[in-house]
Image (cartoon, rainbow, N blue to C red; front, side, top):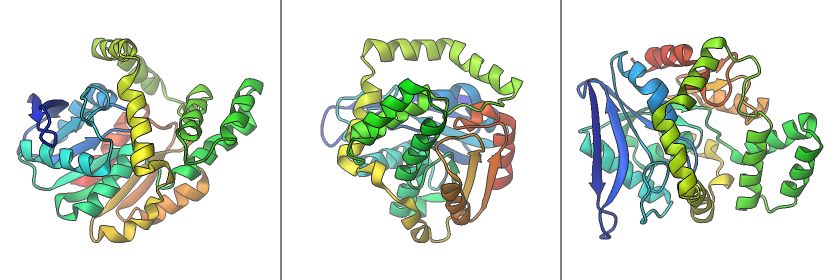
Length: 306
């Protein structure tokens, strides 16, 4: 049974702001909270493609767009870890969840680790899905790929990015743009099922409407969060492997795509070391695991979270 709520959170005494969220499945089932990527991302891809199918395996799947990101277009977003954690607390409280399994995709995985360190009593397990634990290493992996496989225009753009301060928004955003333009997020051996799932996602009416709204608002909920988290939390400089010893007894699982150009062997090896519950590299799969290899993704989650 699907449950859709758009509830109002009071933001630090300021006027009430709406945060988009949605739940799938039986509220009495094992709870999962999906944390989307970004900053400046949305849970819409997971919602449209995977959330319902995962809930049908016996889970209560909750997702949301972070304050000021995606479909949560608010004017009080501070883009800080503490505000993000407070919103997660409020979300879980609204759904009656005392302790939750976190699936963190990309930047969402970084947040999952930080949240578990801050609120260990509220986290059962963490699944890192294509989540960096050293973002500077991921940025360098993109640079290396573009240096080897990029055309002359891409290499010229790379040269410009490399002149920027590595802590700046120009360095990180420029690198992510290079990644998108040079197939870093795309598997060259994507299955026919994966291709069909990507096509279905982009043709979905809600996705088309979302992208039209993004364009109409000049991509406000994409750009502002990126700048905010860089300025306020220096998130691109985080070295999350320093946080794993603080997770106490919370199991961590890692699921990554072999074709994901954000990761070199050194970072994947380190992630595998810290994935206390299990670690898997999926074939024919890149960054959006739940679109590229949905059946394998759900099968692993079901095995890990039971």
